Length: 296
Length: 311
Image (tube, rainbow over all chains, first blue to last red; front, side, top):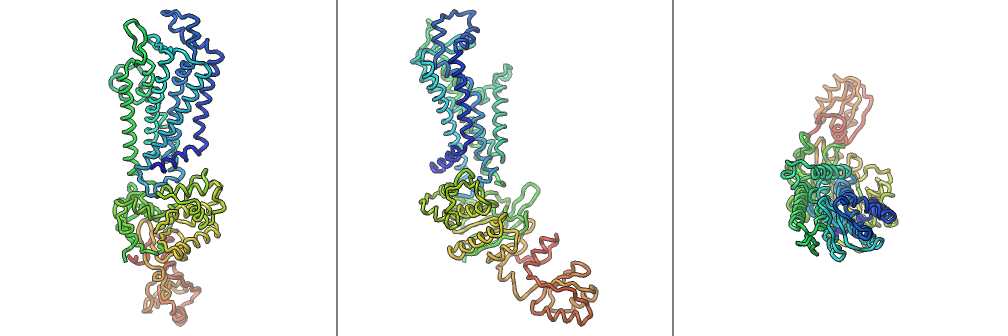
């Protein structure tokens, strides 16, 4: 099985187009960092302007606000929405791409089962997702910390602000990246399922993005009937639950409780629902692939 | 002797279209078994079913005495195949593609062994070249190398000479002969060209529109004692009576008012010409074809079933 995984990873990482995703991410992160490096204070003023009616902020606070942890949070908010496309580019191609090239025959005429092949391709997609997130962590977290230094992290919410002490932040990023890995793996599993149904890689990539787009719109819509019936079951609703690690509990005096997460059960439930989706997509992929006639 | 491959009542339906209908055949160990038929006859569909790429609608396939559906992995460990055209990863080298094929078969041969395989198909000097730079013939030979990498007992080659130039066709033919003669492999080779199959196969199966039409050993099917004689004659009415009255003439098939085909012993052609001349029937042309060629041409040129299937 490991040898088969090695083959799949070899195929993914020997293709030049795989690195388009890594290049695109680097470009976006560096552009954000560059803009904030030269014009960060204006960005902070803009962010705080929404809260200025009820809060007064000192200049020192504003200066400290712009640090590596905040920049990383901004980047994650921007990039984690775009990353499903980058994941679909690889996972959507995994079966359909091989079918269109005729190399699926090359694999399926060997003594490996179709379920094994799906597992291996899924595992390779997971490794690719982890590599993307590691790359993002290096660029967004390490890069921002090196460029802007560290300080307390202040996260703005519609209800107010959340402040975390700087030595209480790093683990939250680790947890957020871990959660993002589950969220993006859900997209990879969906893309793999759609890839099984197609013989052209463009179809599953576009279909994955369409599903993510439609579900995200539904997740964001404020229609009461959807809030209780549809939204709780859309995987896109739960993909953004990584933000929960940056929402903290406050004590009786209103001070942040170190190491706390405001609603950990909700975050864990979201993770559980995403894992359920992964299992469902994977099982369906195997079920359909085992019955599929390979005609290309 | 237990056959290596036993296909029983195999059928495949795609919606309302029946691509393969109730095909049965057996392949013995050490044979080069030819699959002959026009494009769309059902050859590739049958071979794909034999490689588990397509699920049969009905029927069963046994290889090495084992049911293919129940013992897929065990069987495929001993089968190598190139189905339709050999597709490889163009951005990888010939050596890397071959190593990948080996790993997929669950083996990890040494570099020396893999280079020997490439040498066997004449690609050792291009081992490091990306496959996307290869000609069709080279890809075909690499396809055969990947099919042989795990030293299978049964090799299935679907249209291995398709798209090749005459030299490429000769190379593949030579390779198939060497595999059979020097390595005692059993091969199933499909083609739409009788001339190709005739040169390499010991046994033959002709498929037409998804049905088996004829099967047998080449030396029996190409019976040198019997022939089909194409005649171009001047008087159909008189000729018909004469041919019907001649007892050693097997069958007569009129293609037009001037042309007919006669199944008869080859050594009696001079006698037939003499009888026609004596009856004042003008003979404009006489051409002899062996019965299989005639049969195959009939299949490919007309819709009618012209001869008895040797089922």
